[in-house]
Each structure stands twice: as C-alpha cells, then as structure tokens.
Image 1 (cartoon, rainbow, N blue to C red):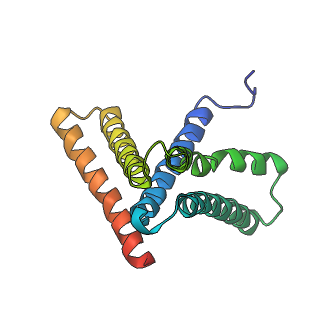
Image 2 (spheres, rainbow, N blue to C red):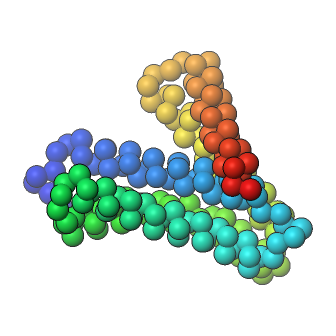
Length: 169
C-alpha cells in the first residue's frame, strides 16, 4: 500500500537514485575487474577483491550519507532515513553478484578464472552501453543521436575506469 504522504514523483526519484548507485558501482567494479590478473590470482583472492570492493563502497556510502545528513541538518538522522539509505546504497552490493557468480563457477571448475573475469567485464560493459542507450532514448533522441550519446557516455565511463586503474596502481 502506498504511503498517503508520498508524492507521485517520489518513487521515480528514488528509482533514479538506485540506478545512479548501480551505474556507479558497475563503473567501480569494472575498474577492479580490469585489474585482476587471472594468471597470478586465485579464485579466492579474486572473490575477496570483488566482495571487498563492493562492501567497502557500500560502507563508505552509508557513512558519508549519514555524516553529511548530521552536518547539514544539525541533528541525528531518523531511523526511517537510515533504512531508506541502506536500500538506496544496496545496488553497490548487487553489482558484485554477477562477478561473484562467475568467480564461483571458476572455483567449481566449470570455467577458468580468465573466462569468469572476461565475462564479468563484458557484462559490465553491456550494462553501461544499455543504460546509455536507454538514457538517450528517454530524452527522445533519434537513432544517430542515441548512438552518439551512448558512445560518448561509454567513453566517459571507460575514461573514469582507466583513471581509477591508473591512479589506483
């Protein structure tokens, strides 16, 4: 049942925030996946890196949001706001699910770690491309403009990933 105090646009705003978190998490995990060298990494270490990245980003997001709320509002955050924030930042954890699944398949011997990492990278790139195409189409761009916008957004995303990899190592 809907909350009577909920405005019609509230759900869409919340969904947009969830998607923003998912896109951010995909970019961050893509950078991490690109740094995994399957020839010199065990499946356990790869899983720890992916899960550790997701958990640390999730925790950092929760802490930053709580701190910023207290600083700006000058009061403790209400419990309902905290619960909303936990849900809002959950896509950071969800982004790790597919890479962890492929790494688990590698650990069980169904595929190599190299294939697991490559499939996860490919899936992340396809997700980013899909979201770029959807965002261009959502504003009514024509086919050519959609492709141009998607290419630009994907290039920017990959530049962010490249920068994170370069600076991080």
